[in-house]
Amino acid sequence: MFNSLKEKLAQFTKKIAEVADKKSEAEVAAVKPTLVEKTKALFKGEIILDEKDLTPVFDDLETSLLESDVALPVIEEIVKSIKMQLVGKKIKRNENLPTYVQGVLKNAIQQVLISAKPEEILNRIKKRDPARPFVIMFVGINGTGKTVTIAKFAKFLQDHGIKSVMAASDTFRAGAIEQLEKHGKNLGIRVIKHEPGADPAAVAFDAIEHAKARKLDVVLIDTAGRMQTDVNLMEEMKKIHRVTKPDLVIFVGDSLTGHDMIMQSKEFNDATEIDGVILTKMDSDARGGSALSISYVIKKPILFLGIGQKYEDLIAFNQKWMANRLLGEANVAG
Ligand SMILES: Nc1nc2c(ncn2[C@@H]2O[C@H](COP(=O)(O)OP(=O)(O)OP(=O)(O)O)[C@@H](O)[C@H]2O)c(=O)[nH]1
Ligand SMILES: [Mg+2]
View 1 (cartoon, rainbow, N blue to C red):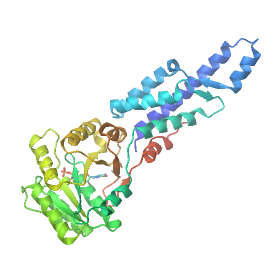
View 2 (cartoon, rainbow, N blue to C red):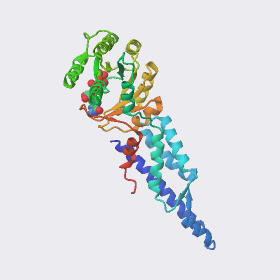
View 3 (cartoon, rainbow, N blue to C red):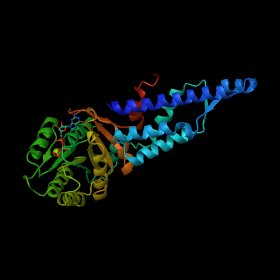
View 4 (tube, helix red, strand yellow):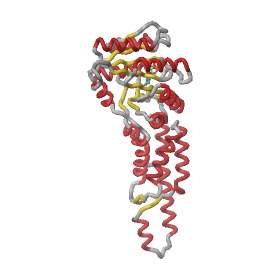
């Protein structure tokens, strides 16, 4: 996972260490032999890296992040944060510099990420008005993994003793209703459906009524994949939102799509405000940039990650996990 970005961050750490080494050698060489005290201080003391020393390394880092699909404002924020932690700071010469730089990078990465604990969602479901089910609407462009993610989410709720019903509100794509029904059957969860081509908002409305009648906790609304540029389908999505007044709108994004996904999430967020994000296909060779960028750009948390096609392949997201993935296993010593 994130191999190229991981490699680039490791390079950054290595380059900083090289700059520091060169600088301290140069400073030692510049000290006049008569100034014994000064030489001593330099050896046991600190090194200060200034902006001039680091500019080429930061330039390389910016290019690397851009190549890994990290969005520009996120790159700026990361670099700003690293500069604040590195430039002009006294670093002890006997300190392990790569470890120090790793820590700086870790902070910078964690700062641009927003997460929300699954327990927060479970608590909101438990504390809702009992007269109404908790309604969750899943949106996103075509093929990102919405339907499979809904099934995984239903399983996650089931594992926590929460009963749900699924609304087959993708009445647009051929085979979409059957696909959701298959998941429903596998999981023992009811799917509310109408005919293909029916009004998706009406399907979702019926699912809410069904949940009320059966005292089910949650309604999970599957919606058709749509490009953010498709005006009619975007209007249809807004209608589902108006009719169902969801407690949570989850944007399902394909982590392999990079910059495009960030742009799409912004457009979806403008159309029906997104409350959180699930990124799918993290088990494939995701470059990591979109995961690093999305929560900063739309100011909404990443809730879960899809890491495979099985129902249990849904894991909670948190900043530490991501930073460790990007840095923890990276070989920085070399
Ligand atoms: N490897 C992997 N595949 C995934 C993951 N999530 C979804 N998929 C696969 O992605 C493909 C599309 O998934 P769907 O759930 O049908 O996607 P969708 O967004 O509902 O698609 P539309 O309804 O056509 O817009 C399927 O083959 C899924 O099995 C994941 O986390 N990892
Ligand atoms: Mg689908």
